[in-house]
Image (tube, rainbow, N blue to C red):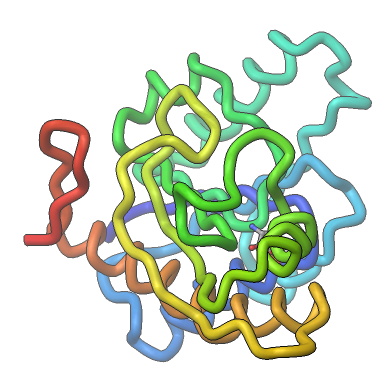
Length: 207
Ligand code: GRF
């Protein structure tokens, strides 16, 4: 059983998709052992509580010094026994010390088709605002492994979503979440939990 820790910052709809995926058998061989939030007000924490999953808050307010914040995060991950770390709507930049502790064992969901609309400053609604500004006809979501950069690690899964004329950023965000994020993130965890993923020469292969 792959012990999975989920890091969150907000509403937790991606966390919910993971929990529902385990309940419904879309994800096998995995369990969520901890939810870690950098935001005490994150509704994701309520979702964890309702699912009976231990959660911990590690905030910049409690750990103003960056290295102490990163150390607290790494300690919480280690104490959870996590073998896979999933960034699900997580706005924390993961420090190199944590990436090194979990080589090719941290995945992130990004609400665009990387390498489009990604990198520093591209998160949440901003991603969809930029996609609409550029006038793309197709966008989507990406699950990728986390390396030392921002949205730069090996891509594991992507799913395309149609941009409809007249979409507002919020309408597009919801469609990307429903049709892409909540589908490929559970699928990615299931593939990893069942030993069907290998990172070779910087590329994520599905076996
Ligand atoms: C979503 O736009 C997701 O793509 C991004 O964070 C936002 C909130 O996610 N990663 P969640 O509802 O907290 O899972």
